Image (cartoon, rainbow, N blue to C red; front, top):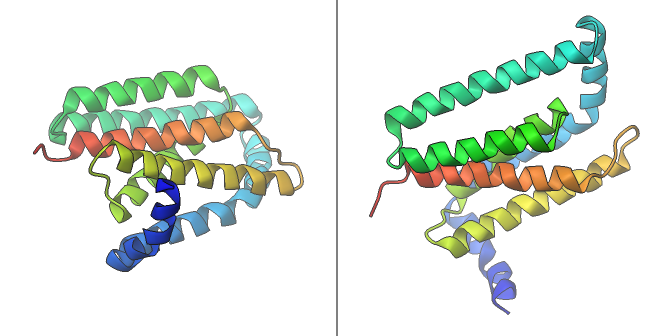
Length: 182
């Protein structure tokens, strides 16, 4: 019953923070617009870079640079740096051990950003609020996989949904680590 009540009261959140939800909507529109183009871009990159290994190295290097920048930001600005570093370590281990596909690693970062954007639009103040946001991230991730299933040369993969939720959790963990105590 509680979840039904949340869906009934959800439009109120849209009215309270329309600009923040606009950013979520624009981010999702961009994401879903690019999904059909990814195989074409990947094939082009593989041709230009002379193989998959080179593309993987570039993606992994860019992600490592982003991770290093986030770690530096955490050390300089986070109110709970150990918590943030813990989330980043778990995220890095998950991304490195669960998948070797650079596509899925990029999804991981995309959904971390999505988790942060949704939190900005619908701030969580307790565990239930964070769970609400993770459910929204999981629903978008499931929708993403269903959309990919409908496209030629794409497929549905539950591991991707899992990685999306873990990415959203990373984003929320970082938000929590930067929140002021109190």
